[in-house]
Image (cartoon, rainbow, N blue to C red):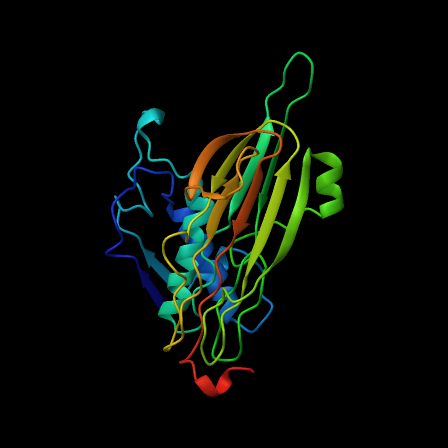
Length: 269
């Protein structure tokens, strides 16, 4: 039997980062399946020997309100908070350092008008995974609760008014340790038309933690260079903004935490 207790979790948030018991249960099932060596079915039977306690009124179990306007928003809880729940569980079990802890949600598009059709594009962007006692974290991949893949560059540019200027590994962003954390990604997009842009990201002010003395991964960064500017400016971790043709968006995703203390003897020339 296992008892997972979320007592001490912070109260309901004003933002949309609240989750609910269903999201938390999914994260718990994911962690347990990662620990089980057998290839078992994905169903609630995984939780048969497990009890989960989530205090009502915390941001993982908001008290519902009959008025939809007053209900705590949970949109970001599914994509962002779920990632952090997994990090907490794997860290508490001393299995893995923190991974990037975000899905780096990117959305852009335009509404329909009399002379052209509207569209919406949504993707999540990979980052670094946390290292374990058995080896380093992986670079530039979708971690844990993310269940999407990146659009191929050729398809992206063919179907949408954008040019992909860079898609690369963010070197040096993984934590340093006996086993280094995985590196994040760099994605730079130039927009060819005026559009609406939304970002829902996290780990922009905090760092994915290391485990067993390992160093943390680097925080993520969102930047934009307007068409009439020569310099990039920072964007908030969650924002909506108008895009003009010629604007360039640069997203640098977080790296994963390291496992074990770093030894200078491990450095390469």
